[in-house]
Image (cartoon, rainbow, N blue to C red; front, side, top):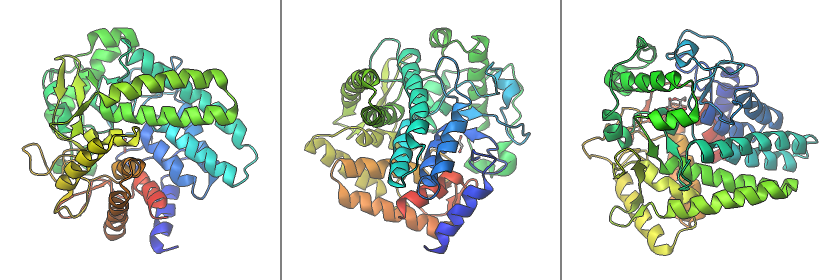
Length: 421
Ligand code: GLC
C-alpha cells in the first residue's frame, strides 16, 4: 500500500457524515446520488458494511414513485444553493426533485460480490432490500422518463446527467428562459474560482427549470408535458442498461424469476435503442433533443459511454477507438469531456473539457468490455498517475494535468481505490 491509498481512506473518512459521504466539504455538503454509488464501490474494497450503508442511506431519500433524487439533504447546511426551500418537494426527508445517473445497480452488484468474497453473513438480506429499491427506480425510469417506450430515457434538467454544463446542452438549454421566481444566490463561486464553474446565465436557466417542475408538484406526467428541456440521453441510458444487466445478474443469484424477466425485457429494448444512436459519420453515439426532435451532435465524452453496456461489432469498436485516440492525442490527462479545441472546449470549466476520474472509470470498463485492453490499461494508468501527481481533485485540466475544482473529493478517492488496485 502506498501513501495515496492512505490519503484516499482519509478523504472518505473525513467526508463521512454518519453512514453517507458528502462529495466534498462545503461545496457539496449533502449526499449526492451517483457520487454515493461510486463511493460505495470504493468502500467495498475495504469495508463492506460501510459500502452497504452508503447505498442504504441513499435509499432513505427514495420517493414513493421510485425516483431516487440527486441530492438527499440529511442535515441542513447553508453553504449550498439551491437548498430544500428552492426544491419544495414533499418526501419525508428533504431531497431535490430531479435524479442522477443510475450507477446504483452497478454498485450494488460490486458490493454484493465483495461481501460474498468476504463471507459476510448478512450480504444476501442487505442486497435483497437494496435490489428492490433499485428495481423500483428502474421502473420509474421506464415509466416517467420513457413514457413512449422508446428504450432511451430522457432528462428534464441538465443536472440529471451529472455533467451539469456540458456543451451537449447548449442548444436545448438556450430555449429555457433565464427568468426565475426564486432569487438565485449562488454559493459555489464562494468556494471555487468562478472561471471553473458554470456561468450565471446557465444558473438562471437551471433554476427556471426547478421552478417549472416545482409548479407541477413534481408530478412526472405533468413535468413531461411542461418540460422546456427534454433530452433522450446516451450516457444515462448506457448506465441504466449496465445497471439493468447487473441487476439481472443479481436477480439470478437471489432467485427472483419475475424480476429477472422484467429486467430482461427492459434491457433488450434499451440495448436495441442505444445501438441505433451510433452515428458512423461522427464515430460516436448521440443523444436526442426531444423538443426539436434533432440529434445532439456536440462532441462530448458521453458519445463513448455506451461501450460500457454494449458488445459492439468490430468496425464500430475500431471507429470509436480511433476517435477516442484522436481526442486524447497530446493530452496530459485523458479523457477530455469535450473534444479538444472545438469552439465549446474550455480546459478548466467543469464539464466543458476537463477529465474526471469517474468518467474515466466508466470508459475503462467500456473499453475493456469491447476488447480494447491496451487502451483501457493506458487510460487507467493515466488516471491513477494524475491523482498521484495532483491529489484527489474534483477533476483535471486535460492539457496541463492540473487538479481543479474542489479538493479532497470522495469519488476521486473511490476511483483511486478501484483503479489503482
Ligand atoms: C456536480 C457534478 C455532479 C456531481 C456533484 C457532486 O454537480 O456535476 O456530477 O454529482 O457535483 O459531486
